[in-house]
Length: 166
Image (cartoon, rainbow, N blue to C red; front, side, top):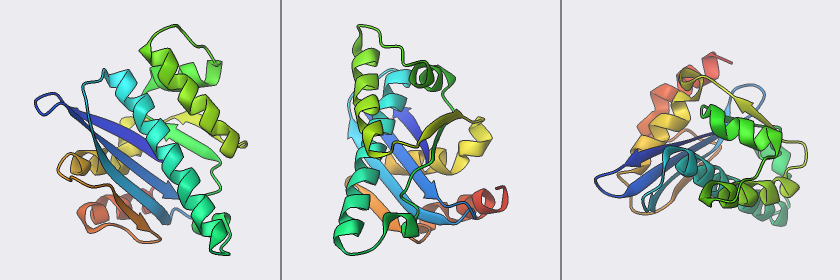
């Protein structure tokens, strides 16, 4: 799962982009969501992780209820990738400070219980481009948009590059 957040200070909003792919590089699920509020870059990234993990958990549970196995649609998360090194380090170190950042991290830690084998990895910005472009796209939407087992048209070209770079 690749996650990114893009901040629009003028509209006081954060775009969240999430791409879940399988081991073959195929896109299995995509989320684009806009959140209203003013957050720092690190807090926006952690908020994006929280929203993305909640969404992945809910999609996985709904699929299981539909008698589909979550791993068949790529929602048995093994890795979570972000291009924000500070956030990745904080999650891997398990360090919590008494701040808004620390409180947001606690939310992510609690969601890890639904994905016990997940590993948090830092990736370069170019390796997170699909999630970034989706987050930018999300700034222009009003409702949460999701796609399962298909690539959304707004980022089709980025998804093709994502699939070929794995």
